[in-house]
Image 1 (cartoon, rainbow, N blue to C red):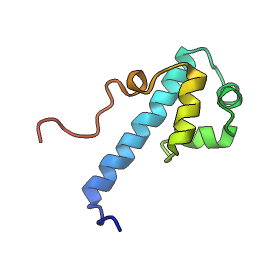
Image 2: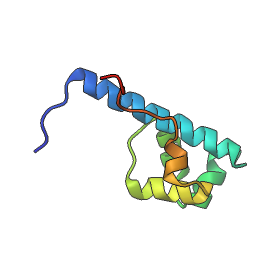
Image 3: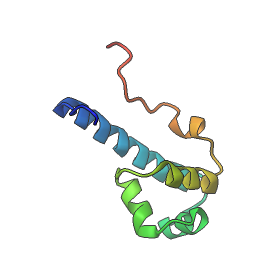
Image 4: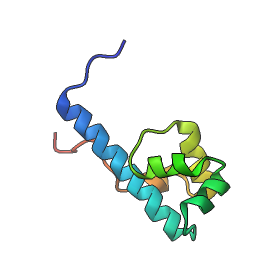
Amino acid sequence: MAPEQTPNEEQVILDFLKKVGLRIIDKRIEKGHESVADLSFEAKIGANQLRNYEKGNNMTMYSFARICLALKVNPEEFFKGIKIVDEQS
């Protein structure tokens, strides 16, 4: 069983998920998928589920891979500039 997270760790993770959600929105628009329905169809995931991801809800790696395929973006490019660890720590 994993050790309990401190409140600060929990917030770091929630902030990271929010950044991932915002990146999905940015990439969706950048790649010409104007609506959630359009991308969800291409990614073969439900529109409500995609909306939840865009709001920062947790997702499986399988769903993330489907989104990357639909956006035609590699994970390295997707995560560019998103940090979870303060490099000064």
